[in-house]
Amino acid sequence: MLEEKIEGAHLITKIRKRDGRVVDFNANKITEAIWKAAQSVGGKDRSIAEKLTKEVVRRINEKFAGKIPTVEDVQDIVEKVLVENGHYKTAKAYILYREQHRQLREVKNLLLDVGNIVDSYIAQEDWRIRENANATWSFSGLLWHVTGTVMAYYALNLVHPKEIAKAHTEGDFHLHNLSMSLAGYCAGWSLRQLLHEGFNGVPGKVESSPPKHLRSALGQMVNFIGTLQNEWAGAQAFSSFDTYLAPFVRVDRLNYTEVKQAIQEFVFGINISSRWGGQTPFSNITLDWVVPEDLKDEHVTIGGKITNDVYGDFQDEMDMINKAFMEVMLEGDAKGRVFTFPIPTYNITKDFDW
Image (tube, rainbow, N blue to C red; front, side, top):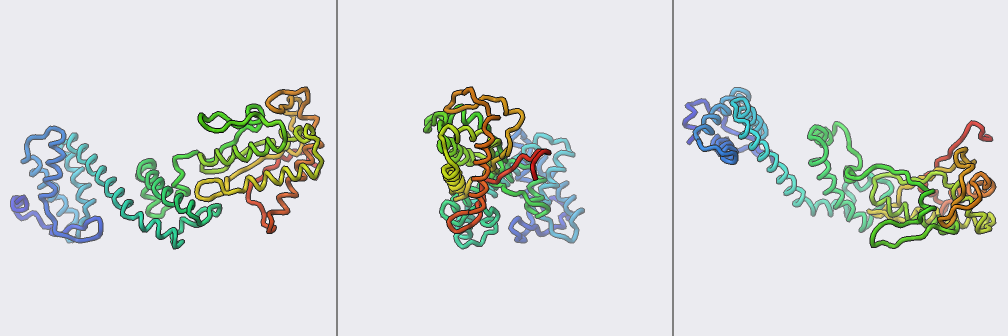
């Protein structure tokens, strides 16, 4: 036995395992681990592993006299001894072996915890259920909770640096929305391009031609945001909402009541739970209020075709859209509840009539 060869230097008798249990310390396990790492890189002499183990045990006794070291403490010393004695290839193999086993333990723990993940959601005991106020408790929410837990594990252990993962795990700070770490955060999209091209471009999916009417344009915006939201963590935005849509009001010869009805359909459509986890798409629209200088002389696009009209000629229609939008948002839904989306942003210039 290796312990007998250490000639009384072996003072440590216990070691604390990762699950907290205290068991007998066995130096032979250190030898076996070093020997396996050495063999994986061509090592032939087991006696070297035994010699290195003696040095490891000596340092353990020196550092943890009267204490109980953990498995991680011992492995850290093994790595240091291997490097300091010039066994770089063996050290690299040992470190890799250690990391692979750590990942296997994490995966095993995750698999064993699936039942608890599902049960905690159903019982609404997990704080993460309430982390997103936009999500609802539902079967689709359960599916997202389970898959999100897996993605959060992946991001924390395989994407973020170990220092960041450790700080999050120990509560030094909180990484919000870990389950969406592989996705981009927010995105702004060109409403002008959508009106020029229509909603298309994905092989095998239904495609729409450029819209010719206000309701068609608004419907494509709802579909666009609902679809793209599934690929992003945060808000999806369109700019110059009122500027680009104003010409459709005149082309369709709509009165104010009809414009308001179309805007109401848009707002209700944008608040439908079409996002993963039973969520409403996080959306934002920017309204110009008055035609921006850079768009005043730009020719209007209707049905994908450029017309002779310019956006600067449609201020009256913009006013109708803005009034209708604000009234719809203020009125709320059938129960008078305020609409969460879209979040409006207004471009206010210095000449705004307060």
